[in-house]
Length: 526
Image 1 (cartoon, one colour):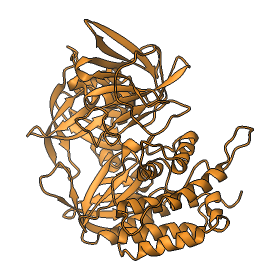
Image 2: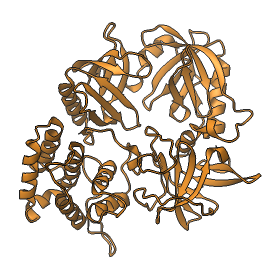
Image 3: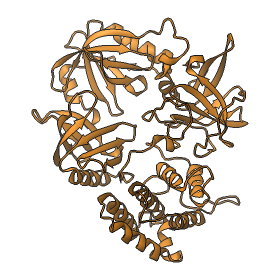
Image 4: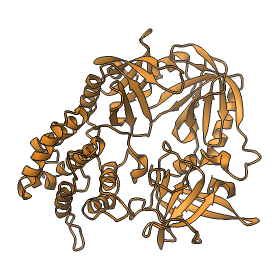
């Protein structure tokens, strides 16, 4: 996620190793990556979690990193650590009452405490991510203990499953009878709550961005809803709406899938049998993975009931693992990753890829490895700033000494959409950059620094083709095929050598790159 941040107080310089973190920005941002958490603070760029650039008093900026054991700030120009607070000296974080975009962090300084105020347009996300580590804080608020309520979840098969609802500082957790957390409903993702008229003690939670409904039954309904509202308001600064109009169980069943409850969204066009890998079950769960005109649907094979549904527009990438011929994952723009296995994996992936692109989502691609969220300077669902694209184009040409070329290629791919650069045309102005020259220079650098193609690992070769595809999707990159000296010859030899590997992943990446040269990906009307 991306956040614009400002801080009200200058910071003291703290000791720490310099860290090359990617780029500096003209606006302030916070970035998150929670899935590769490490026991290290900031010792490797593969383990950083949340990055922030903040403009302090309109004078300078800082990177704000939320790690697994410490909060760290960086100087965006020198990439040096300026402050670091281990969680055993971090008191807490809370929304500021003065402004809707401000939050305050409190940390220990000797026997006293010190506060600093930040502002961000994505305050709920910052607070949520930080409060995930609140059990590690040095002080626990006396009145902020988790509240637990016995309840029952109205399951997708209409069974009532006993659960425990735990109202935490950043979410309400659904816990099974063994104490295992099944899922978290983060307050920032809850759209509204409503009571159910024909079920005493029942209420629904709408979440997920498209009104997906979840129904619970409890004798303490009012207490649960009140606890959720208060926890969200006091810890996240986010007010959860409660609908005055009651809904019925029939309404819930009709609208359970939110805005994708209509027939067009749930009518399957193609179906595949898969095994879903999830921490909820000890063994993989059998599912029917189906595609409709605009959604990916999971159905229960025995009852054919829809278990989950997600829009095709939210698919970010498809992961085709090389160490298992049946395993694959679907990455979504909200950071969720769903893992499956199927005997017809490649046919299934082709169908998903065609369906996603047919729905208008051109940014999806098939990869060998998971997306490294720590490399991306922004959220997956929003394009990065123009300066970020320019910076990574420059890194391909002039790679910093502390970064290897394949890392620069990976960072470029992580920050530029698969459909191409969003800022590929030079703007007017005396000091504006020549984007065409920059793109041509990056293409030349990719081909000149490609390395030994016979010994290059498959994942790095795939990254190179993905970077080339992103560049030639622009008008300048497309024209480089005929304008750059020896470009056609070098690209032709590169593709031929790639196809000779007889690796399906490499073959797909190289052919997909060629397709971008056969038909322009950019807007040809301008």
